[in-house]
Image (cartoon, rainbow over all chains, first blue to last red; front, side, top):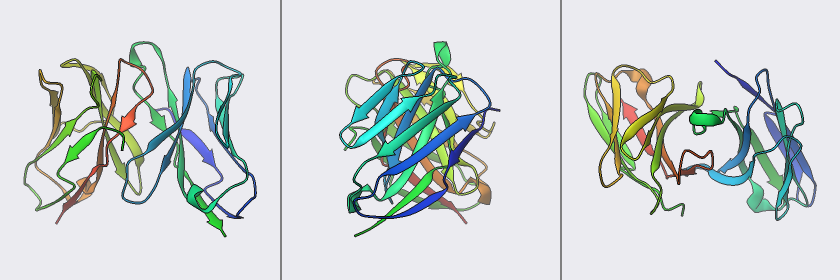
Length: 113
Length: 112
């Protein structure tokens, strides 16, 4: 089946630093999404991307849908302690299987004050 | 709070048993999705229902089944439970078939 390779697996950064993470696939996706999960909770939708090349921001978060449709990037600027959590990318095939998301393995983010 | 509710929060049961997990979608959402999250497999899509009908299926075991009721709530039934079924089970919902899914808080299932 489809697999998403998400990197890095974990990051330890200082408060105020910028963060970059990415997701690559061997298959094309028609939608890319980024979620954040905190301990004991469900994933929370951060950003959804629907067009190749699309760049979308949500506050300090910016995500891009790669032009090959096989990758996506998430940047967090000026990190703060509450950014701590696991960030997941997810790819959607589109069409009638729109909702059948494939998730990456996650990037664990730790922010030191 | 995503607006998606799941019950119970925790469930501990023995191998061979059957359990039912319940999900209520956000108000107005017609699609419900079920996911399994485990340490070794990550977040895996199980099944999607749209307005009462099955729309997409993932790697859902034959021992697992789901349904969506006329009031749009959904139930995931897990039977003949094995130790390996221990995981977090999430329900998500969306307005249509869309990829923008909103997740509930999950049910942690422990099979002993």
